[in-house]
Each structure stands twice: as structure tokens, then as C-alpha cells.
Amino acid sequence: MFNSTLPAGRILHISLRNARHAVRYHSTGGPGLVSAQKFCADSVRKNDYENYLCIPFYPKQVQNAQYAIRAFNVELASIRESVSNAVIGKMRTQFWKDTIDKTFAKNPPQQPIALALSDALQHASLSPMWFKRIINEREENLEDPQFMTIKDMEKYAENTASCLLYLQLESLNVRDVNADHIVSHIGKMIGITTLLRSIPFHASQKRLVLPAEITANHNIVQEDVFRQGHAEGLEDAVFDVATAAHDHLLTARSMLKSVPPAAMPVILSAVIIGTRLRFILVPSAQYLAKLEQHNFNAFEPKLQVRNWKLPLDIWSAYRNQTI
Image 1 (cartoon, rainbow, N blue to C red):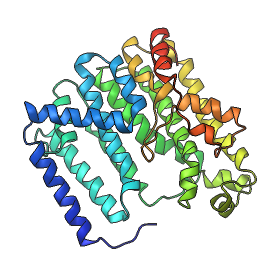
Image 2 (cartoon, rainbow, N blue to C red):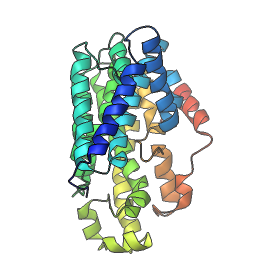
Image 3 (cartoon, rainbow, N blue to C red):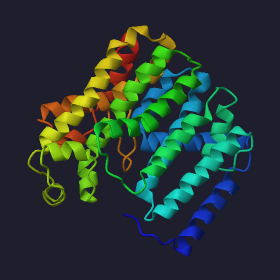
Image 4 (cartoon, rainbow, N blue to C red):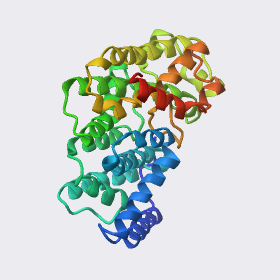
């Protein structure tokens, strides 16, 4: 739980940081826009490398839009772990709500991601509601409410990972119900898988992301997980949640042939996409397979190792139109 006070020094730090951004990115065209786009690309490369590898498979004219969308996601996903106070977190989410409104009103603030998104709107038709859903879901989770059921986890995943994929579909001008359906399932798989992978980190912070319904079914004592990094019944609980994620992956695979080929760059997300957690991302489908290999032990260190063959896997999936 966050502290309820808001230190004056922290407010000053945020103000100074925004002022530095305003000085550096003073123009929506020319060098200012180039700097903003480089900022976004660098952010994605540093913090979301798996998706950075995926962007070259998009048409050249919308690649900068992908960097802007992904940099926005990096920024929102980082809020929970980069603030010590829920009030500060809500100030940052409110800033992004205002930023999206101003950007779509063609008056973006002098902030690099906002400027890059403003330029992206010149090349792609994006809906503000997807941005708002991501912001609202992140805000609702600032104080770590425990999921009660797997359906709650799916709602969280839909409003974060799936909404991000909807934006990327829009950037490709793909308006297709089958494409929307498949990326909804992919996003839910991604969101649930990312939460599974985050179990060791969250346990170190005295938080448990498994749904209360599942932990109760398997008689898991949370304090055992926090103290020992393990608890009786934990593997069975992880199995239940992983099964739900895998079901979404299987559904997505079954629909693949019904989706327009133009959507394939977004569908590659099933191979590699993840949500930022302390600057580490998850190759979702591969993680589920490795989790099964290790008997659903979420604390197995090998599960945290990045697959060095991932660039080849992405290229192969794109070439063969598979996930």
C-alpha cells in the first residue's frame, strides 16, 4: 500500500522533469519531431526489446507510429513501480489522460511521446478510447487490489495488452472483426502470462497476483509464498491460471486463417509480446511452454532467461504466417 502524503520535493522533481522535456522537444516538426521519435524508438529498444524486434515487419510508413504507441505503453506500465505514493501515480495517469485529449485535439504538450503520437495521427487513424482504457486500468491497479477470479485477470489483460493490439491494428488500417477477435485472445494470453512471470518479483514485494479464488481452492498460505518463495499447492494454482492463458492461445491459433494478411505484424505479438515489469519482458507463448517443462514452478530461474533465438522465431513466424 502506498503512503498517503505527497512530498513537496517530489512535486518539484516532476515539474522540473517536464520543463526539461519542454525545452528539448520544442517543435512538432523538423528536429523537434525527429528527437521525439528517436526518444520513443530508444525507449522501446531499451525497455521493450522483443517488440522492438517486431516493428521492422510493419510497413515503413507506420513504423514510427508503432514506436510511439509502444513508448506510451512503456511509460504507463512503468508508473506503478516508479512511484512511492498512489497520489503521485494518479497525477501521472491524469497527465496522460490530459495528454491524449490534447493530442487528439491537435494541441499536444511539449513531451516526446505526445509529439510522436501527434505525428502518428497524421499517418494512421487511432481511437482515443483504447489509450484511455489502458490509462484507466493502470490507474485502478495502482494500489494492488488482488484479482478475485481468472475473469478479473482477463479483464485486466483485455484493458491493457489487448487494447494496445487494437491500436496497432488501427495503425495498419485493419478493420476486421476476426482480427479484433484474435488479438483480444492474444492480449488476454499475454496479460495473464506476464502476471504469471511476475510472481517472484511481486512476492518479493509482499504481493500475490494469483486470483484469490484459485489460491483458496489450493489452500495456499500467502505468507509462505512471501517468506519462502514457495508454498504447498502453488504449482497447482499456477497450472490453473496457465491453462486459461493457453486456452486463449489455442483459440487464437484456430482463427489464424480467417484473419487478413495485413494484420500479421500485430499477430506476431503472440510469439514475443509482453508487458513491462521492471524493464523485463516476456515472450508469452514460449514462456508457457517453458513453464510446463518446469512443472509450473514460477520461481524456476531458467524461466527468466531471454531466448537468444527470438529474432529467428519472429522472422519464421512472419514468413510462415503462424504463431
